[in-house]
Amino acid sequence: LDKDIEPTPLNVYSQFILRVKKNIHVVMCMSPGSEAFRTRLRMFPSLVNCCTIDWFSAWPAEALSSVGKQKMDESNLEFKEVN
Image (cartoon, rainbow, N blue to C red):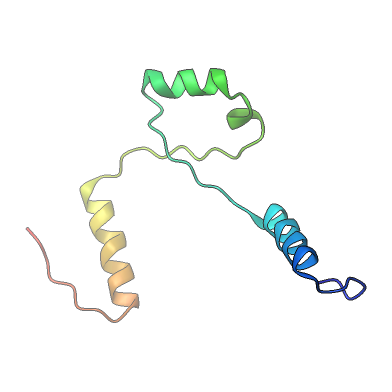
């Protein structure tokens, strides 16, 4: 709470809402190849205008395995090769 505000339940809740609005992040995942995706973009243009879009394409199996193995090694967890 701000130091000048009396900590009543309403003021505490109001400060909470202000902090949530200031710090909230939303992650949405959609398939860009579908008609539903294009329809949503037309219905909600702010998804393009007011958002950061990261386009991810398919990873090769070798790359997925390599990244997974590196993360497992960093965590000191055992990793057994899967064929």
